[in-house]
Structure formats: C-alpha cells, structure tokens
Image 1 (spheres, helix red, strand yellow):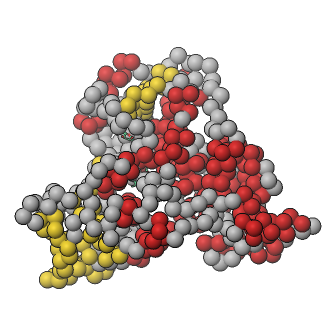
Image 2: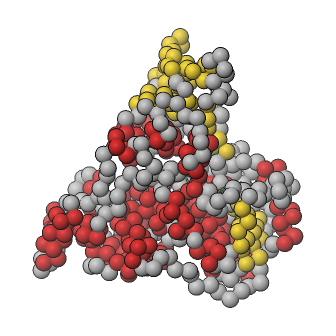
Image 3: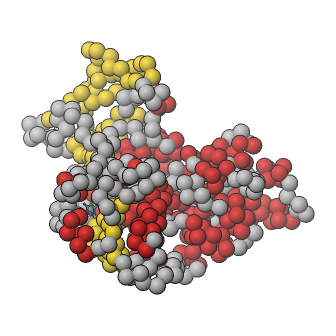
Length: 479
Ligand code: FAD
C-alpha cells in the first residue's frame, strides 16, 4: 500500500502544475485495517495510522478552497487546508505546530471526532466526487501528524505560561472540559488545582471510550503536560461528597465545573436490577480498566447510540460469541455514527431493529437468563422528525442471554447541585448559565463547561466549552 502511495506521490510531485483533475484522480488513502473477525477479540487499536507517503498523498488531494467548509464545520475552526498544504509539501513539523496552535487534544480528537458529521462531511473534494466518503480523511491525516510528533519530535511541548496572576482556580473533573479549562487557565498565569473523583485522569477518554478506539497511552501522552505545567492534581476527591463548592470558595477565586454527564439512565423495565444486567458506563469502565467482569457468551445491548456500539464491540473482547443490539426503531434512525455502525456490523453484531425490552427474566439464582422483547413498528414523526416507535400489541419474542448492557443515555449527576445552595440546573441536570454564550452558573464565580453545560455531546465540544469558560474566568478574575 505504501509503495503504491509513494509512487503516486512521486508522480504528482513531478507534475509541473497539479490541476483539479489531477487531484480528483488521486486515490483516497486510509490507514490499514486488520480483518474484523481477527481484531474483535483484541483490545488493540483496530485501525492503523497512515504511512508518511499515504498522509502526504491524502493531503495533496485538498482543493485548498478559498472559504474552507471543513474549517467552518469544525467546532474549533481548525485551519485544515493550511496544515494539509504543509503536510503535502513534507513539512510535517509545521503541520504539527499548526494543529497544536488550535487544539489541545489533537491525538485524541483525530481518533474519536465524528469527522463524517463535521469536517469531512463538508469537504469540497467529497462534494466534487459526489461521495462524501471520498472527502479528505482529515481525522487520519491529523492522526498521522500527531503520531509523528510523539515518535519523531520529542513529544508534546509544555506551553509558555504568563507570569503568575496570584489567582487560584479549582477545576472539578478531568475529562476533556476540565483538562482544557485547566491548561488554558494555567497558561494565562493562574494557579490551578484539578479535583477528580476517580483515581486516574481523563473522564470518558479514560473510562468510557474503549481502548481499541482510543489507546490509553494516547490519553497519558496528552495529559502528561498537566504536572509539567505545575497544575496540582487531587484524585479520589468527589466534590459534593468529600468537599463542597462552598468550602472550595474559601480557598479559590473561581471554580470550574466539568463533571460530565455520565450518570446512566435506567429503562424502568422489570428485571433491570438482576445480576448480569449492567449499565454501559459500568460495563465499559470495567472492560477498559481490565477489571474482571462477568460477561457471558450471549450479550444483549439495548440502545442505538455510539455508547451502545462501543458496548457491543467490547462484549466480543470480553468473550461473547453472540452479540445483539436491540433498538426500537430501524437502522435508518439510529443515532450512532455510520462509521461506528459499520464497525459493529463488520465485527458480526446482529442488530434487532424494532425491538425493545419488556422484561428481563431471572434464573433460580437471580441472574438474567432471558430478555422478553416487544415488537415495534414505525409511526408518525415525533417533534424531531424521526418516526415514532409504536408497540405492536400482543407481539413479543423471548431470547436467551447471560448478559444485558443498557445504553439508553445518561445525565449529569446531582451531588454538586444537591450540596450547593443557589446552583440551578435544567431537568436533565445540566447547569443553567446566565446567557447562551455564558459559562457562568447561577452562583457567582462558579463556571461550567463540557457535557455538564450542554448535555452529552462530543470530546471536541467539551474541549471548546472548557476553553470558553477559561476565557470567561480569566476575564472575571483580572478584567
Ligand atoms: P467527562 O469526560 O465525563 O469527564 C467528567 C469528569 O468529572 C470525570 O473524570 C468524572 O470522574 C469527574 N467527576 C464527576 N463528578 C465529579 C465530582 N463530583 N467531583 C470530582 N470529579 C467528578 N465523543 C466523541 O467526540 N467521540 C467519541 O467517539 C465518543 N465516544 C464516546 C463513548 C462513550 C462510551 C461515551 C460515554 C461518550 C463518548 N463520547 C464521544 C462523548 C465524550 O466522551 C464526552 O462528550 C466528553 O468526554 C465530555 O467531556 P467532559 O469533560 O464534559 O466530561
């Protein structure tokens, strides 16, 4: 693959001028994939990083649009055509610097951002070729650059920091929102302490997104700058249980809440508390950490989002032979990214469309042994325009299983709100802010970002709103 890419790159580079027609003729490049049935039993990353020749060739396909739609579609406005130009020309270090100037977590975002819904979905090359799968694979080119930084450029550099302002900020949570707020606040000269409930940093990056999509040494790599920047880290401390916001306010000039939205929702279906029935959060957390978890040969995953896709793939890696995703609408309405859906189907997961659990049935030891599923059909559209799932009365099916994983959504947990007078939240637990673009909560000096602000979204959005909050905190502290 690399030889072919190198030959094509040499041919393109030898042309006196590269026309649009030449660019359109370059075959789209992708990192190699292992055979799906082989890798579904390993925790190793399931796709490989592109080679140098492939990355440069892929970057050469960029049409260098005057008004780049890809940058406009990126929540952090990455200057994609500019770094692709540097990469295509062989200036990898320049490309890395340009990416780093915009993003605090590029090794992670390049692997997990929903590119097919953001930058790549707007790529002019994809539009020109009338196939968005043939848009520039910008996640993969970014991943190449960041792997290059790790392997050939001496690693991630510690950003320059402004002189001390003498102000102290407490950051609650160490997911992408807390990480980004902490780094930006420290860069602006504030003293920063991160309080994290778990024993390791990273939030969903560490405990939720599986190792086979986001290796944990990549999380360690990005997070390694925190102590180097002099950011104090207190793990194993839950704000709202071990310390309250009121207490923190005595020691800190401002507080950032980035506690995410990882409290699992339950179905309310009889039997959901049986042994062998897990929430996706618990199942993925244990799987990611290599903690022993009882997971059977036949696993049912309930839900149709990306978390359900991750849980289904994790099930194979925990020893399952038969994995079924139960979803009450059809594949067409599934909220999961198409790429994630493709992965589970390639790995052999069966999707049971138009089914939803009615009951989980126990064996004599109180362990789940079967799921009774109601059958559904599509009805009139709901407020969001999606056809409603309508139960077909009297029709159900019962299937055997040893494990059930519930992946039907999550919300912000309440321990911080419950212990902080005057801290207002919405019905889904997200914190009410003072205006749409404000990150300040109803309590003076307490700011919020990430999923705790906008509900469960994406890593890049959590990073963005963590950074927005840092700017607003800085303004509040030093004017
Ligand atoms: P989190 O990442 O949830 O971090 C919150 C942190 O706060 C945690 O470390 C938590 O332990 C800590 N905390 C909570 N309460 C307290 C407290 N009271 N005191 C102290 N610390 C506390 N997004 C993508 O872009 N791409 C993906 O592929 C993707 N896959 C996902 C897969 C799964 C399984 C899940 C669950 C989510 C996925 N997401 C994905 C969504 C993305 O991970 C989240 O939107 C993002 O992590 C939110 O960042 P955050 O910093 O707001 O919160």
